[in-house]
Image (cartoon, rainbow, N blue to C red; front, side, top):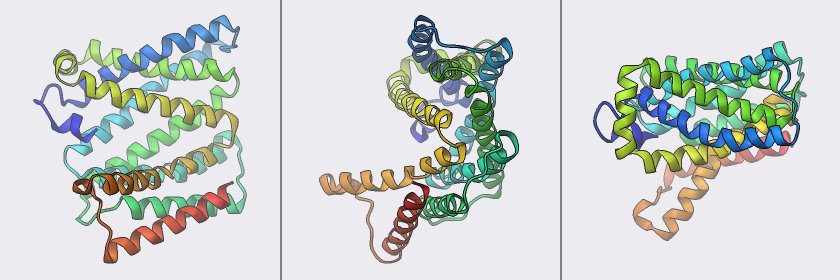
Length: 276
């Protein structure tokens, strides 16, 4: 994502252009899943369910627009770390809208996971207050999206809900393509300059979304969101493995930085045990 907003000219690095291309890729995944849902007789619910599950795609893309915009002015780790607040907002939303009442140890697990994620994600340097504010808004929007998706998606078949989720993102992307002249110009430029990189990025992200939102249909929302907070742990493991193979990309790990990572991993392991 940092590469996509940093490389190239202003047009193909525009968040609207990137989201338009993202929506196009989401649409490619939506078609086979939607066809499968129809062929298997999956229930799509009523018109209100369909409209809501498609419409909230705009909510999700609003959050990602903010995220991409903030990546232009701040280090990736300092931006992404704010997504670890999503389970906290999700906890409140699930309590109010879904009527979910997690056990006290689930709440404690989420706190451990969020704190551990922040420790792993946060790097030295002063965080800009503007970034803090807008990334909190982005996290709040995604938490709201998760709550609404779970609320309406659980009333229909899982495969139908997943296909509508992807269609919603595709519709949001196509809307940018039609309504935003700058996004449209950047989209066509991006097809020749960034298609390969974004196709790989969005394909992996879409597969992760399918897994994530399928889990929200099958388990309490806040537990699914809390488990997703393990992402920085996998990033660290991947960095250590890559560093062992390619020393030039080593993350390092001495002194205070090493102690911070040990504390973070310990917190996240404790959180994972409590969560399950």
